[in-house]
Amino acid sequence: QAQLAESGGGLVQAGDSLRLSCAASGRTFSSYVMGWFRRAPGKEREFVAAISWSGGRTDYADSVKGRFTISRDNAKNTVYLQMNSLKPEDTAIYYCAADANADVWDSEWYTSKSQYGYWGQGTQVTVSS
Image 1 (cartoon, one colour):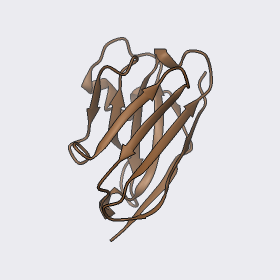
Image 2 (image 1 turned 180 degrees about the vertical axis):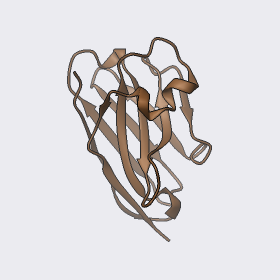
Image 3 (image 1 turned 45 degrees about the horizontal axis):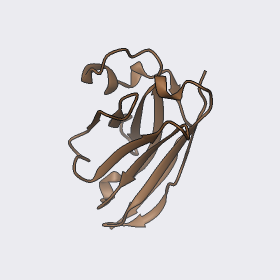
Image 4 (image 1 turned 135 degrees about the vertical axis):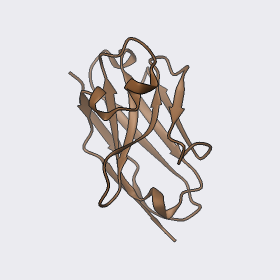
């Protein structure tokens, strides 16, 4: 089993940057597809970004493409989300998630929150205008 812990959230102004980190326990981190999701007030949890096992493949929601970058360090069991040019509409609780069952890189899978079996507790990101 994996335990995930996010950090790095906070209150920033529009246009600022933040880097979220998600540390995972266990010895099989490199076998997980990792994803970031977010839940804005009054909205459903939505896909933000995903990264493949070795980090060679990534994908993003259209709303963050070109501004956010997902990366991972398998030696440190950590996945990151670099968020630049933040907007007020990025305000949300950000969650990292691990998919231990994926064996293909398929957008129908890694964009679906139901695919992920492990979740962190979330970290709040607030962007003021």
